[in-house]
Image 1 (cartoon, one colour):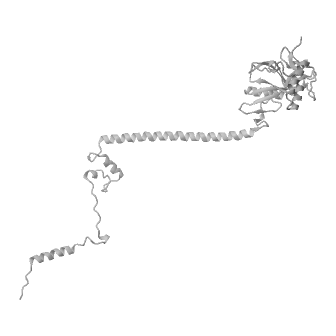
Image 2 (cartoon, one colour):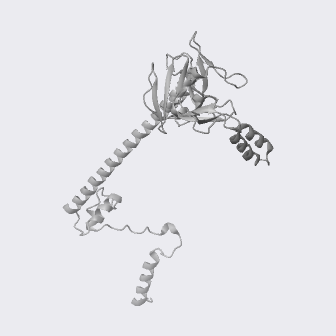
Image 3 (cartoon, helix red, strand yellow):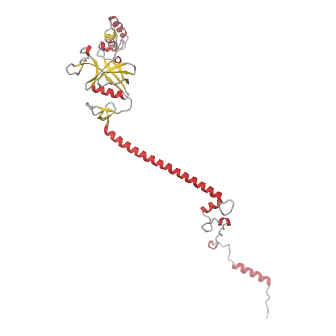
Length: 336
C-alpha cells in the first residue's frame, strides 16, 4: 500500500487561501454590502455637554461647548456673568422697543381719531357754509342773533381788500332817512351846506367787520363833474368806535376822520382823510381841505390847460376829453 506524504508548505498555502476565500470581497460594487461609516465619538469634554445623552451636540449644547475655551467640561463664573449681562441688556433693549411700539401705537390711534374728527368737522362746515359771488367763504347763518338784514358772515381767514362807494346825501327832516343828492343825470341836487358823505347801514356793518379782522378797507368817490374816482384809506384804524355818538378815528396814514352810526339807517363819514387836496377834482367846497374852495380855474389857466391837451393829437378822443376836464371844478385856494 502506497502512502501519500503531505507537504507542509503546500498545506499552509491552502489553509491561507481558504481563509481568504471565506472572507467576503470588499471590492464588490454592491452598495448594500458596504458597511456604514463609524460614528465619530465625542471627546470626554464634549460628553459633559451632551445634556440629552444622544451622543451628539445640538445647537444649544454646541454653543455651551464653544464657550468652554479651556476644556474644563463646565462653564466658569466669568462666562455665566457675561451671559447674565448680555441677557439683562437684551431685556432692556426689548423693554425699550416695547415702549417705543406702545408710543407709536398711541400716536396712530390719536391720528386716526384726529382724522375722524376733521372729517366730521368738514362735513358739518360744508352744511353751514357756502361761497359768495366774490369767492369768499361765508356762513349760512346770521353773524349775530340781533341781525335784522340776515347778512351772512364772511369766514375767510386771508386778508382781503374792500372798497366802498361813498354818496353825498342829506337827511330828510320828516322821517330822518337819507336822500341821495345825485340826480339821474349825475348832477347834484341838494342843499350842499346840509349834505354829508354816507354809506348805507348794511354796507357800513360789512365795513366794520372787515376792519375788526384787520383787512384793508377804503372808500371811494365818483365825481359827477368828470367821472373820475378817488379812494381814501379807512382801515386799519386807531381809535374806538362808539355806538351812540361820533367816533374820531385815525387811519394808517395818520389822517383823522369821523364816523357816526345811525343804527338801521346809514353811517356818516367826514374828516381830513376824506377831502381833496389843492388842484384835485371836486363837486362842492365841502369836498376840499380847509382853506380851499371848489371852483373853476381862470380863463387863462383853462386855455393853457387846453394847449397842453392838444399835444395828445395822436389820439383826438383823449385830447377832447382832456380839454373838457380843463373846465371842471377843482379844489383851489379861496379868493378873499
